[in-house]
Each structure stands twice: as structure tokens, then as C-alpha cells.
Image 1: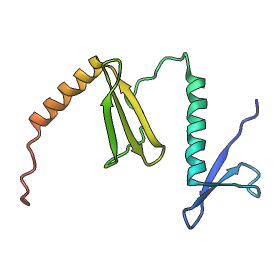
Image 2: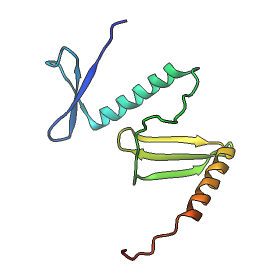
Image 3: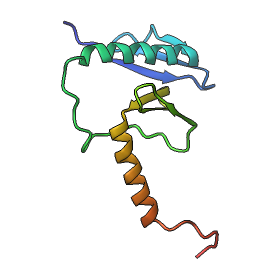
Image 4: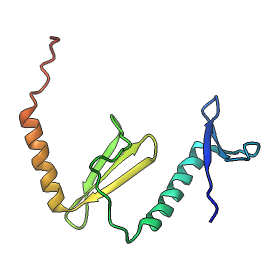
Length: 125
């Protein structure tokens, strides 16, 4: 199978990005933000299918794409767990479901973390 490489160039106005196939930069593919969001969704679905059946790798030591100070949503999930969704600046809206036992572990961790971290006093030091 041939190996394909691709680059991305963001337009100066930030309204489109061009996909640049290696060796053929004279034929970029311009995309709007909505088109990039749909492409990410399609690529994510393709990746999901490609990793199906493989063991989930450990996140220990993995490089992760962090989203901070973002909008988020949480709601009960029919299985007794919870659905967490948030806006990731690189990937758009993403979410995951945690079963009840994992939620309990997260709640314990957060309670311990809050107990060890004093609240801000509002005064400068």
C-alpha cells in the first residue's frame, strides 16, 4: 500500500485551511471550519473502525491534547453512568460515558484533591 503524507496550511484570514498532499503542493484542498470539523469526524470514525478489536493502550506517558477552560456538559446516562461532553479546540465537540464504578473512583479522587487544596483566599501574596 502506498504511503501518503499530508500537510495543512491555514489561510491568513483563518477562514480556510488547505490540505497539501506531499509532492503535489500545487493542488491544495481548501476547507472551511465546518468542513474540517466534518473531516475530523470522518477520520475519527475511520480510526475507531481501524482500532476495533485492539487492546486499549495505556495513557501513562502518552501525549494528550489538552482542552482547558472549555464549555462542558454532564448528564445521567441510562446505564447508571454519566455522559461527559466538552468542546475541544482541536477536535470540536467530544464526549465519553463513564460507568457508575468509574464515576465513584473519580468522585473519590476529586473529593481528596479538594480536601488537600485550600480554596483561593482572594488576596495577593
